[in-house]
Length: 561
Image 1 (cartoon, rainbow, N blue to C red):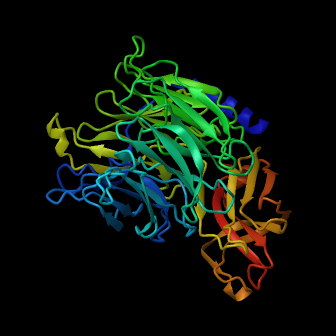
Image 2 (image 1 turned 90 degrees about the horizontal axis):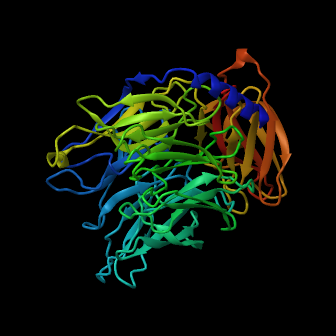
Image 3 (image 1 turned 180 degrees about the horizontal axis):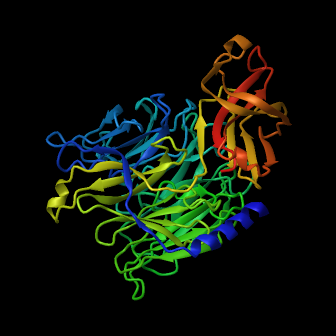
Protein backbone atom coordinates (compact mmCIF):
# COMPACT_ATOMS: atom_id res chain seq x y z
CA UNK A 1 0.00 0.00 0.00
CA UNK A 2 2.80 2.41 0.91
CA UNK A 3 4.51 1.67 -2.43
CA UNK A 4 1.34 2.73 -4.27
CA UNK A 5 0.92 5.87 -2.18
CA UNK A 6 4.56 6.89 -2.61
CA UNK A 7 4.45 6.33 -6.39
CA UNK A 8 1.22 8.31 -6.66
CA UNK A 9 2.61 11.29 -4.73
CA UNK A 10 5.96 11.46 -6.54
CA UNK A 11 4.40 11.16 -9.98
CA UNK A 12 1.75 13.75 -9.16
CA UNK A 13 4.45 16.26 -8.20
CA UNK A 14 6.12 15.71 -11.55
CA UNK A 15 2.96 16.17 -13.61
CA UNK A 16 1.80 19.23 -11.63
CA UNK A 17 4.86 21.06 -12.88
CA UNK A 18 3.73 20.71 -16.50
CA UNK A 19 1.47 23.20 -18.29
CA UNK A 20 -2.13 22.15 -18.80
CA UNK A 21 -2.60 21.21 -22.47
CA UNK A 22 -5.72 21.97 -24.48
CA UNK A 23 -6.29 19.13 -26.88
CA UNK A 24 -8.53 17.99 -29.68
CA UNK A 25 -10.13 14.61 -29.13
CA UNK A 26 -10.40 11.80 -31.66
CA UNK A 27 -13.85 10.37 -32.34
CA UNK A 28 -13.64 6.57 -32.44
CA UNK A 29 -17.36 5.85 -32.63
CA UNK A 30 -20.42 7.88 -33.61
CA UNK A 31 -24.05 6.77 -33.69
CA UNK A 32 -26.58 9.43 -34.76
CA UNK A 33 -30.26 9.70 -33.95
CA UNK A 34 -32.49 9.13 -36.94
CA UNK A 35 -35.07 11.91 -36.51
CA UNK A 36 -35.50 15.41 -35.07
CA UNK A 37 -36.12 15.63 -31.30
CA UNK A 38 -34.93 12.07 -30.73
CA UNK A 39 -32.05 13.19 -28.45
CA UNK A 40 -30.24 9.87 -28.74
CA UNK A 41 -27.83 9.35 -25.84
CA UNK A 42 -29.37 11.88 -23.48
CA UNK A 43 -30.55 9.11 -21.13
CA UNK A 44 -26.96 8.00 -20.51
CA UNK A 45 -25.03 4.76 -21.00
CA UNK A 46 -24.65 1.34 -19.43
CA UNK A 47 -21.74 -0.90 -20.45
CA UNK A 48 -23.02 -4.49 -20.54
CA UNK A 49 -20.05 -6.58 -21.72
CA UNK A 50 -19.16 -8.23 -25.02
CA UNK A 51 -22.65 -9.29 -26.09
CA UNK A 52 -21.80 -10.05 -29.72
CA UNK A 53 -18.52 -11.83 -28.97
CA UNK A 54 -16.30 -9.67 -31.18
CA UNK A 55 -13.76 -8.82 -28.47
CA UNK A 56 -15.08 -5.29 -27.77
CA UNK A 57 -17.52 -4.55 -24.97
CA UNK A 58 -20.97 -3.26 -25.93
CA UNK A 59 -23.28 -0.71 -24.33
CA UNK A 60 -26.90 0.33 -23.89
CA UNK A 61 -28.36 3.79 -24.48
CA UNK A 62 -31.49 5.07 -26.22
CA UNK A 63 -34.08 7.84 -26.26
CA UNK A 64 -36.78 8.90 -23.82
CA UNK A 65 -38.60 10.65 -26.67
CA UNK A 66 -38.18 8.32 -29.63
CA UNK A 67 -37.97 9.43 -33.26
CA UNK A 68 -40.90 11.32 -34.77
CA UNK A 69 -43.54 10.74 -36.02
CA UNK A 70 -44.21 7.70 -33.78
CA UNK A 71 -42.22 9.10 -30.84
CA UNK A 72 -41.83 5.70 -29.12
CA UNK A 73 -39.18 5.78 -26.38
CA UNK A 74 -36.67 2.92 -26.45
CA UNK A 75 -33.51 1.48 -24.97
CA UNK A 76 -31.06 -0.19 -27.32
CA UNK A 77 -27.84 -2.18 -27.16
CA UNK A 78 -25.07 -1.07 -29.52
CA UNK A 79 -21.90 -2.75 -30.67
CA UNK A 80 -18.87 -1.06 -29.13
CA UNK A 81 -16.88 -1.91 -32.26
CA UNK A 82 -19.24 -0.68 -34.98
CA UNK A 83 -22.25 1.01 -33.38
CA UNK A 84 -24.57 -1.58 -34.93
CA UNK A 85 -27.83 -2.36 -33.15
CA UNK A 86 -27.75 -5.60 -31.11
CA UNK A 87 -31.25 -5.43 -29.59
CA UNK A 88 -34.01 -2.89 -28.97
CA UNK A 89 -36.67 -2.66 -26.26
CA UNK A 90 -39.46 -0.25 -27.28
CA UNK A 91 -41.66 1.41 -24.65
CA UNK A 92 -43.88 -1.43 -23.36
CA UNK A 93 -46.29 0.84 -21.48
CA UNK A 94 -46.86 3.94 -23.66
CA UNK A 95 -47.36 6.56 -22.39
CA UNK A 96 -45.49 5.96 -19.11
CA UNK A 97 -42.36 8.15 -19.33
CA UNK A 98 -40.33 5.04 -20.23
CA UNK A 99 -36.53 5.43 -20.33
CA UNK A 100 -36.34 8.82 -18.65
CA UNK A 101 -33.27 7.34 -16.99
CA UNK A 102 -31.26 4.16 -17.26
CA UNK A 103 -28.71 2.82 -14.80
CA UNK A 104 -26.56 -0.26 -14.51
CA UNK A 105 -23.68 -1.46 -12.40
CA UNK A 106 -23.69 -5.25 -12.34
CA UNK A 107 -24.98 -8.66 -13.39
CA UNK A 108 -28.41 -9.38 -11.89
CA UNK A 109 -29.18 -12.74 -13.48
CA UNK A 110 -25.73 -14.35 -13.43
CA UNK A 111 -25.30 -14.77 -17.19
CA UNK A 112 -21.96 -12.94 -17.27
CA UNK A 113 -23.36 -9.71 -18.76
CA UNK A 114 -24.24 -6.53 -16.88
CA UNK A 115 -27.92 -5.63 -16.82
CA UNK A 116 -29.94 -2.40 -17.02
CA UNK A 117 -32.48 -0.66 -14.80
CA UNK A 118 -35.02 1.37 -16.83
CA UNK A 119 -37.36 3.83 -15.15
CA UNK A 120 -40.98 4.51 -16.18
CA UNK A 121 -42.17 7.15 -13.72
CA UNK A 122 -45.75 7.43 -15.08
CA UNK A 123 -46.50 3.74 -15.37
CA UNK A 124 -50.08 2.96 -14.35
CA UNK A 125 -51.45 -0.52 -13.69
CA UNK A 126 -55.02 0.61 -14.40
CA UNK A 127 -56.00 2.21 -11.11
CA UNK A 128 -54.96 5.73 -12.19
CA UNK A 129 -52.52 5.89 -9.29
CA UNK A 130 -49.61 6.22 -11.75
CA UNK A 131 -47.47 4.27 -9.34
CA UNK A 132 -44.43 4.21 -11.61
CA UNK A 133 -42.22 1.23 -12.40
CA UNK A 134 -38.65 0.06 -12.80
CA UNK A 135 -37.92 -2.59 -15.44
CA UNK A 136 -34.95 -4.89 -14.84
CA UNK A 137 -33.67 -5.58 -18.36
CA UNK A 138 -31.17 -8.20 -19.51
CA UNK A 139 -28.07 -6.56 -20.94
CA UNK A 140 -27.52 -9.61 -23.16
CA UNK A 141 -30.96 -9.91 -24.77
CA UNK A 142 -33.07 -6.83 -23.97
CA UNK A 143 -35.75 -9.03 -22.39
CA UNK A 144 -37.41 -7.82 -19.19
CA UNK A 145 -36.19 -9.95 -16.27
CA UNK A 146 -38.72 -8.52 -13.82
CA UNK A 147 -40.71 -5.36 -13.07
CA UNK A 148 -41.12 -3.47 -9.79
CA UNK A 149 -44.16 -1.22 -9.34
CA UNK A 150 -44.45 1.74 -7.00
CA UNK A 151 -46.62 1.53 -3.91
CA UNK A 152 -49.25 3.84 -5.41
CA UNK A 153 -51.34 4.15 -2.24
CA UNK A 154 -51.09 7.92 -1.79
CA UNK A 155 -51.07 9.17 -5.35
CA UNK A 156 -48.34 9.31 -7.97
CA UNK A 157 -45.13 7.46 -7.17
CA UNK A 158 -42.00 8.01 -9.19
CA UNK A 159 -39.18 5.59 -9.66
CA UNK A 160 -35.81 7.02 -10.58
CA UNK A 161 -34.30 3.67 -11.51
CA UNK A 162 -31.63 3.46 -8.81
CA UNK A 163 -28.60 1.30 -9.58
CA UNK A 164 -27.17 -2.19 -9.43
CA UNK A 165 -24.85 -1.66 -6.48
CA UNK A 166 -22.97 -4.98 -6.51
CA UNK A 167 -23.10 -8.18 -4.51
CA UNK A 168 -24.23 -7.19 -1.01
CA UNK A 169 -25.04 -10.66 0.33
CA UNK A 170 -22.29 -12.88 -1.08
CA UNK A 171 -24.36 -15.00 -3.48
CA UNK A 172 -22.51 -13.87 -6.61
CA UNK A 173 -25.45 -11.95 -8.11
CA UNK A 174 -25.66 -8.16 -8.47
CA UNK A 175 -28.20 -6.63 -6.08
CA UNK A 176 -29.97 -3.36 -6.82
CA UNK A 177 -31.54 -0.36 -5.11
CA UNK A 178 -34.76 1.34 -6.28
CA UNK A 179 -37.02 3.95 -4.66
CA UNK A 180 -40.57 5.13 -4.13
CA UNK A 181 -41.39 8.85 -4.19
CA UNK A 182 -44.90 10.12 -3.33
CA UNK A 183 -46.37 12.70 -5.69
CA UNK A 184 -44.50 16.02 -5.71
CA UNK A 185 -42.15 14.80 -2.95
CA UNK A 186 -38.42 15.26 -3.30
CA UNK A 187 -37.84 12.66 -0.56
CA UNK A 188 -38.50 8.95 -0.99
CA UNK A 189 -37.71 5.51 0.38
CA UNK A 190 -34.84 3.42 -0.98
CA UNK A 191 -35.13 -0.38 -1.14
CA UNK A 192 -32.37 -2.95 -1.63
CA UNK A 193 -33.47 -6.00 -3.64
CA UNK A 194 -31.79 -9.34 -4.29
CA UNK A 195 -30.57 -9.76 -7.85
CA UNK A 196 -31.26 -13.49 -7.94
CA UNK A 197 -35.03 -13.27 -7.28
CA UNK A 198 -35.96 -9.61 -6.72
CA UNK A 199 -36.89 -10.17 -3.07
CA UNK A 200 -36.58 -7.21 -0.70
CA UNK A 201 -33.41 -7.41 1.39
CA UNK A 202 -33.94 -4.24 3.43
CA UNK A 203 -34.93 -0.59 3.39
CA UNK A 204 -31.76 1.38 2.74
CA UNK A 205 -32.96 4.83 3.81
CA UNK A 206 -36.25 6.67 4.22
CA UNK A 207 -35.08 10.05 2.95
CA UNK A 208 -33.47 9.42 -0.45
CA UNK A 209 -33.21 12.15 -3.08
CA UNK A 210 -35.15 12.17 -6.36
CA UNK A 211 -32.16 13.30 -8.42
CA UNK A 212 -31.60 10.95 -11.40
CA UNK A 213 -28.30 9.61 -10.07
CA UNK A 214 -29.13 9.20 -6.39
CA UNK A 215 -27.40 5.91 -5.61
CA UNK A 216 -24.33 4.04 -6.85
CA UNK A 217 -22.24 1.05 -5.94
CA UNK A 218 -18.81 1.93 -4.55
CA UNK A 219 -17.09 -1.43 -4.17
CA UNK A 220 -15.94 -2.83 -0.85
CA UNK A 221 -14.82 0.15 1.28
CA UNK A 222 -15.07 -1.44 4.75
CA UNK A 223 -12.99 -4.54 3.86
CA UNK A 224 -15.68 -7.07 4.80
CA UNK A 225 -15.72 -8.66 1.33
CA UNK A 226 -19.14 -7.30 0.33
CA UNK A 227 -19.99 -4.37 -1.93
CA UNK A 228 -21.13 -1.09 -0.34
CA UNK A 229 -23.15 1.86 -1.67
CA UNK A 230 -23.46 5.64 -1.76
CA UNK A 231 -26.88 7.28 -1.37
CA UNK A 232 -27.92 10.93 -1.88
CA UNK A 233 -30.40 11.90 0.83
CA UNK A 234 -32.37 14.86 2.27
CA UNK A 235 -34.43 15.55 -0.82
CA UNK A 236 -31.72 17.29 -2.81
CA UNK A 237 -33.32 16.74 -6.20
CA UNK A 238 -32.51 18.31 -9.57
CA UNK A 239 -34.68 21.39 -8.86
CA UNK A 240 -34.38 21.64 -5.08
CA UNK A 241 -32.11 24.12 -3.30
CA UNK A 242 -30.01 22.38 -0.65
CA UNK A 243 -26.44 21.84 0.45
CA UNK A 244 -26.58 18.11 -0.28
CA UNK A 245 -25.85 15.07 1.88
CA UNK A 246 -24.40 11.75 0.71
CA UNK A 247 -24.24 8.68 2.94
CA UNK A 248 -22.15 5.50 2.62
CA UNK A 249 -23.84 2.27 3.72
CA UNK A 250 -22.51 -1.22 4.29
CA UNK A 251 -23.98 -3.54 1.70
CA UNK A 252 -23.76 -6.51 4.05
CA UNK A 253 -25.38 -5.03 7.18
CA UNK A 254 -27.02 -1.79 6.08
CA UNK A 255 -25.04 0.10 8.72
CA UNK A 256 -24.29 3.77 8.03
CA UNK A 257 -20.52 3.95 7.54
CA UNK A 258 -20.18 7.73 7.25
CA UNK A 259 -21.74 10.76 5.58
CA UNK A 260 -20.49 13.89 3.83
CA UNK A 261 -22.17 17.27 3.52
CA UNK A 262 -22.26 20.17 1.10
CA UNK A 263 -20.97 23.44 2.50
CA UNK A 264 -23.52 25.91 1.12
CA UNK A 265 -27.28 25.92 0.68
CA UNK A 266 -27.00 26.32 -3.09
CA UNK A 267 -24.33 23.67 -3.63
CA UNK A 268 -26.51 20.62 -4.22
CA UNK A 269 -23.59 18.28 -3.52
CA UNK A 270 -24.29 14.82 -4.88
CA UNK A 271 -23.72 12.14 -7.49
CA UNK A 272 -23.63 13.42 -11.07
CA UNK A 273 -22.35 10.33 -12.83
CA UNK A 274 -23.05 6.61 -13.02
CA UNK A 275 -19.36 5.72 -12.60
CA UNK A 276 -18.29 8.32 -10.07
CA UNK A 277 -17.32 5.76 -7.41
CA UNK A 278 -15.27 2.60 -7.24
CA UNK A 279 -11.88 3.83 -8.50
CA UNK A 280 -8.75 4.21 -6.37
CA UNK A 281 -7.75 7.88 -6.49
CA UNK A 282 -5.04 7.93 -3.82
CA UNK A 283 -3.34 4.55 -4.20
CA UNK A 284 -4.37 3.07 -0.84
CA UNK A 285 -6.13 0.07 -2.41
CA UNK A 286 -9.62 1.18 -1.28
CA UNK A 287 -12.23 2.50 -3.75
CA UNK A 288 -12.85 6.26 -3.53
CA UNK A 289 -15.59 8.53 -4.91
CA UNK A 290 -16.20 11.98 -6.39
CA UNK A 291 -19.19 14.30 -5.96
CA UNK A 292 -20.18 17.56 -7.60
CA UNK A 293 -22.06 20.67 -6.63
CA UNK A 294 -22.79 21.74 -10.17
CA UNK A 295 -25.40 24.41 -9.35
CA UNK A 296 -23.36 26.30 -6.78
CA UNK A 297 -24.53 29.94 -7.15
CA UNK A 298 -23.01 31.74 -4.20
CA UNK A 299 -21.57 35.23 -4.66
CA UNK A 300 -18.08 33.75 -4.98
CA UNK A 301 -18.85 30.63 -7.03
CA UNK A 302 -21.43 32.08 -9.47
CA UNK A 303 -22.30 28.76 -11.02
CA UNK A 304 -18.69 27.72 -11.61
CA UNK A 305 -19.41 24.28 -10.16
CA UNK A 306 -17.39 22.27 -7.66
CA UNK A 307 -15.91 18.77 -7.89
CA UNK A 308 -14.80 17.13 -4.65
CA UNK A 309 -13.02 13.80 -4.13
CA UNK A 310 -13.37 11.69 -0.99
CA UNK A 311 -11.60 8.74 0.57
CA UNK A 312 -13.62 5.55 0.50
CA UNK A 313 -12.13 4.58 3.86
CA UNK A 314 -13.78 7.26 5.98
CA UNK A 315 -15.28 9.94 3.70
CA UNK A 316 -12.50 12.43 4.39
CA UNK A 317 -11.92 15.03 1.67
CA UNK A 318 -9.03 14.36 -0.71
CA UNK A 319 -9.27 17.49 -2.87
CA UNK A 320 -11.64 20.11 -4.30
CA UNK A 321 -11.64 21.67 -7.76
CA UNK A 322 -13.77 24.69 -8.77
CA UNK A 323 -14.74 25.76 -12.30
CA UNK A 324 -12.73 28.57 -13.91
CA UNK A 325 -15.47 30.99 -14.91
CA UNK A 326 -19.09 31.76 -13.92
CA UNK A 327 -21.64 29.27 -15.24
CA UNK A 328 -19.00 26.63 -16.07
CA UNK A 329 -20.97 24.13 -13.95
CA UNK A 330 -17.89 21.95 -13.60
CA UNK A 331 -18.94 18.43 -12.67
CA UNK A 332 -22.39 18.45 -14.21
CA UNK A 333 -21.41 14.94 -15.27
CA UNK A 334 -18.52 12.95 -13.75
CA UNK A 335 -16.85 9.64 -14.39
CA UNK A 336 -13.77 7.94 -13.04
CA UNK A 337 -11.48 7.31 -15.97
CA UNK A 338 -8.18 5.60 -16.54
CA UNK A 339 -4.79 6.57 -15.17
CA UNK A 340 -4.52 9.32 -17.76
CA UNK A 341 -1.05 10.58 -16.82
CA UNK A 342 0.53 7.29 -15.76
CA UNK A 343 1.06 8.26 -12.11
CA UNK A 344 -0.48 5.08 -10.69
CA UNK A 345 -3.79 6.72 -9.65
CA UNK A 346 -7.09 6.69 -11.51
CA UNK A 347 -8.12 10.09 -12.82
CA UNK A 348 -11.49 11.86 -13.19
CA UNK A 349 -13.31 13.20 -16.25
CA UNK A 350 -15.62 16.16 -15.58
CA UNK A 351 -18.02 17.81 -18.00
CA UNK A 352 -18.30 21.61 -17.94
CA UNK A 353 -20.16 23.99 -20.19
CA UNK A 354 -18.06 27.11 -20.83
CA UNK A 355 -20.82 28.03 -23.31
CA UNK A 356 -20.24 25.05 -25.61
CA UNK A 357 -19.55 21.88 -23.59
CA UNK A 358 -16.09 20.55 -22.71
CA UNK A 359 -14.40 17.69 -20.87
CA UNK A 360 -11.71 18.25 -18.26
CA UNK A 361 -9.30 15.58 -17.03
CA UNK A 362 -8.58 15.99 -13.30
CA UNK A 363 -5.74 14.26 -11.48
CA UNK A 364 -7.13 11.62 -9.17
CA UNK A 365 -4.31 12.34 -6.75
CA UNK A 366 -4.78 16.07 -6.17
CA UNK A 367 -7.47 17.36 -8.57
CA UNK A 368 -5.04 19.30 -10.75
CA UNK A 369 -6.17 19.90 -14.33
CA UNK A 370 -4.25 17.58 -16.65
CA UNK A 371 -5.98 18.46 -19.93
CA UNK A 372 -9.07 20.07 -21.44
CA UNK A 373 -10.91 18.77 -24.49
CA UNK A 374 -13.14 21.19 -26.37
CA UNK A 375 -16.22 20.49 -28.45
CA UNK A 376 -15.95 21.27 -32.13
CA UNK A 377 -17.78 24.34 -33.50
CA UNK A 378 -20.15 22.04 -35.39
CA UNK A 379 -20.80 19.48 -32.68
CA UNK A 380 -21.06 19.88 -28.92
CA UNK A 381 -20.45 17.49 -26.07
CA UNK A 382 -23.52 16.95 -23.90
CA UNK A 383 -23.61 16.45 -20.15
CA UNK A 384 -23.43 12.63 -20.09
CA UNK A 385 -20.10 10.90 -19.53
CA UNK A 386 -19.26 7.25 -19.04
CA UNK A 387 -15.87 5.50 -19.16
CA UNK A 388 -15.86 1.77 -19.62
CA UNK A 389 -15.12 0.53 -23.18
CA UNK A 390 -11.80 -0.01 -24.92
CA UNK A 391 -12.98 1.08 -28.35
CA UNK A 392 -9.70 0.76 -30.24
CA UNK A 393 -8.00 -2.21 -28.58
CA UNK A 394 -5.12 -0.29 -27.01
CA UNK A 395 -5.90 -1.48 -23.47
CA UNK A 396 -7.32 1.87 -22.31
CA UNK A 397 -11.04 2.33 -21.64
CA UNK A 398 -12.47 5.19 -23.67
CA UNK A 399 -15.35 7.51 -22.69
CA UNK A 400 -18.81 7.67 -24.20
CA UNK A 401 -20.66 10.98 -24.26
CA UNK A 402 -23.85 12.48 -25.59
CA UNK A 403 -23.45 14.85 -28.56
CA UNK A 404 -25.63 17.52 -30.11
CA UNK A 405 -25.65 20.05 -32.95
CA UNK A 406 -25.36 23.70 -31.77
CA UNK A 407 -28.85 24.96 -32.67
CA UNK A 408 -30.10 28.20 -31.04
CA UNK A 409 -32.90 27.93 -28.46
CA UNK A 410 -35.76 27.00 -28.81
CA UNK A 411 -35.01 25.17 -32.08
CA UNK A 412 -32.39 23.03 -30.29
CA UNK A 413 -35.31 20.94 -29.05
CA UNK A 414 -35.26 19.35 -32.52
CA UNK A 415 -31.80 17.78 -32.01
CA UNK A 416 -31.40 14.21 -33.23
CA UNK A 417 -28.69 13.58 -30.66
CA UNK A 418 -25.66 11.34 -31.05
CA UNK A 419 -23.53 8.89 -29.12
CA UNK A 420 -19.83 9.70 -29.33
CA UNK A 421 -16.98 7.38 -28.39
CA UNK A 422 -13.86 9.47 -27.79
CA UNK A 423 -10.13 8.88 -27.54
CA UNK A 424 -8.87 11.11 -24.73
CA UNK A 425 -6.40 9.09 -22.68
CA UNK A 426 -2.69 9.18 -23.44
CA UNK A 427 -1.41 7.32 -20.39
CA UNK A 428 -0.96 3.55 -20.10
CA UNK A 429 -4.23 2.99 -18.26
CA UNK A 430 -5.06 0.47 -15.56
CA UNK A 431 -6.56 -2.13 -17.88
CA UNK A 432 -9.06 -4.49 -16.32
CA UNK A 433 -11.83 -6.45 -18.03
CA UNK A 434 -14.06 -9.18 -16.64
CA UNK A 435 -15.00 -12.25 -18.66
CA UNK A 436 -17.57 -15.01 -18.63
CA UNK A 437 -20.27 -16.30 -16.36
CA UNK A 438 -19.50 -18.33 -13.26
CA UNK A 439 -20.98 -21.80 -12.78
CA UNK A 440 -22.93 -22.32 -9.57
CA UNK A 441 -21.73 -24.00 -6.39
CA UNK A 442 -23.82 -26.66 -4.68
CA UNK A 443 -25.56 -23.92 -2.69
CA UNK A 444 -26.44 -21.90 -5.80
CA UNK A 445 -23.94 -19.06 -5.39
CA UNK A 446 -21.89 -17.80 -8.35
CA UNK A 447 -18.15 -17.46 -7.56
CA UNK A 448 -16.63 -14.16 -8.70
CA UNK A 449 -13.03 -13.18 -9.33
CA UNK A 450 -12.36 -9.67 -8.02
CA UNK A 451 -9.15 -7.77 -8.71
CA UNK A 452 -9.14 -5.28 -5.85
CA UNK A 453 -5.83 -3.70 -6.90
CA UNK A 454 -3.99 -3.91 -10.22
CA UNK A 455 -0.57 -5.61 -10.54
CA UNK A 456 1.57 -2.47 -10.80
CA UNK A 457 5.31 -2.82 -10.38
CA UNK A 458 6.37 -2.34 -6.78
CA UNK A 459 2.77 -2.67 -5.64
CA UNK A 460 0.56 -5.37 -4.18
CA UNK A 461 -1.92 -7.07 -6.50
CA UNK A 462 -5.01 -8.01 -4.51
CA UNK A 463 -6.98 -11.03 -5.72
CA UNK A 464 -10.33 -11.82 -4.13
CA UNK A 465 -12.84 -14.65 -4.40
CA UNK A 466 -16.45 -13.92 -3.53
CA UNK A 467 -19.35 -16.42 -3.30
CA UNK A 468 -17.21 -19.56 -3.26
CA UNK A 469 -18.10 -22.80 -1.44
CA UNK A 470 -17.49 -22.10 2.28
CA UNK A 471 -14.76 -24.03 4.09
CA UNK A 472 -13.43 -25.60 0.88
CA UNK A 473 -10.26 -24.93 -1.11
CA UNK A 474 -9.89 -22.62 -4.10
CA UNK A 475 -7.00 -22.38 -6.53
CA UNK A 476 -5.99 -19.07 -8.12
CA UNK A 477 -5.06 -19.69 -11.75
CA UNK A 478 -2.83 -17.10 -13.40
CA UNK A 479 -1.73 -17.24 -17.02
CA UNK A 480 -2.70 -16.43 -20.59
CA UNK A 481 -6.30 -15.88 -21.59
CA UNK A 482 -8.06 -18.65 -23.55
CA UNK A 483 -10.25 -16.82 -26.12
CA UNK A 484 -13.78 -18.11 -25.76
CA UNK A 485 -12.72 -20.40 -22.92
CA UNK A 486 -12.59 -24.20 -22.65
CA UNK A 487 -15.75 -26.14 -21.79
CA UNK A 488 -15.14 -28.33 -18.72
CA UNK A 489 -18.00 -30.79 -19.31
CA UNK A 490 -15.56 -33.58 -20.22
CA UNK A 491 -13.87 -33.06 -16.83
CA UNK A 492 -17.13 -33.56 -14.97
CA UNK A 493 -18.03 -29.88 -14.59
CA UNK A 494 -20.86 -29.16 -17.06
CA UNK A 495 -21.65 -25.50 -17.54
CA UNK A 496 -18.21 -24.43 -16.31
CA UNK A 497 -15.66 -22.68 -18.51
CA UNK A 498 -11.90 -22.32 -18.03
CA UNK A 499 -10.63 -18.94 -19.28
CA UNK A 500 -6.98 -19.30 -18.20
CA UNK A 501 -4.09 -21.33 -19.61
CA UNK A 502 -2.22 -21.27 -16.31
CA UNK A 503 1.51 -21.00 -15.76
CA UNK A 504 1.04 -20.40 -12.02
CA UNK A 505 -1.48 -21.59 -9.48
CA UNK A 506 -1.93 -20.91 -5.77
CA UNK A 507 -4.23 -23.01 -3.53
CA UNK A 508 -6.03 -21.10 -0.80
CA UNK A 509 -8.58 -21.88 1.92
CA UNK A 510 -12.10 -20.47 1.48
CA UNK A 511 -13.49 -18.92 4.68
CA UNK A 512 -16.96 -19.46 6.16
CA UNK A 513 -18.31 -16.52 4.12
CA UNK A 514 -17.21 -18.11 0.84
CA UNK A 515 -14.29 -15.71 0.36
CA UNK A 516 -10.54 -15.83 -0.30
CA UNK A 517 -8.16 -12.90 0.00
CA UNK A 518 -4.73 -13.24 -1.62
CA UNK A 519 -2.23 -10.35 -1.77
CA UNK A 520 0.84 -10.71 -4.00
CA UNK A 521 3.75 -8.26 -4.17
CA UNK A 522 4.68 -7.49 -7.79
CA UNK A 523 8.44 -6.94 -8.30
CA UNK A 524 9.62 -4.47 -10.90
CA UNK A 525 10.58 -6.23 -14.15
CA UNK A 526 10.45 -3.52 -16.87
CA UNK A 527 10.89 -6.03 -19.69
CA UNK A 528 7.50 -7.56 -18.75
CA UNK A 529 5.59 -4.26 -18.63
CA UNK A 530 2.25 -4.57 -20.38
CA UNK A 531 2.23 -8.39 -20.39
CA UNK A 532 -1.44 -9.45 -20.67
CA UNK A 533 -2.58 -11.82 -17.92
CA UNK A 534 -5.79 -13.63 -17.04
CA UNK A 535 -6.82 -14.71 -13.53
CA UNK A 536 -9.59 -17.07 -12.45
CA UNK A 537 -10.49 -19.15 -9.40
CA UNK A 538 -11.07 -22.90 -9.53
CA UNK A 539 -13.36 -23.53 -6.56
CA UNK A 540 -13.48 -26.92 -4.84
CA UNK A 541 -17.01 -28.20 -4.22
CA UNK A 542 -17.49 -31.99 -4.15
CA UNK A 543 -21.29 -31.62 -4.09
CA UNK A 544 -21.55 -29.35 -7.15
CA UNK A 545 -20.75 -31.87 -9.92
CA UNK A 546 -18.84 -35.12 -10.59
CA UNK A 547 -15.63 -33.15 -11.18
CA UNK A 548 -15.76 -31.70 -7.68
CA UNK A 549 -15.03 -28.12 -8.73
CA UNK A 550 -16.61 -25.05 -10.32
CA UNK A 551 -15.10 -21.98 -11.99
CA UNK A 552 -15.44 -18.30 -11.17
CA UNK A 553 -15.64 -15.38 -13.54
CA UNK A 554 -12.22 -14.27 -14.80
CA UNK A 555 -10.43 -10.95 -15.17
CA UNK A 556 -7.90 -9.64 -17.72
CA UNK A 557 -5.09 -7.35 -16.59
CA UNK A 558 -1.71 -6.10 -17.71
CA UNK A 559 1.44 -6.54 -15.66
CA UNK A 560 3.02 -3.37 -14.33
CA UNK A 561 -0.03 -1.22 -15.16
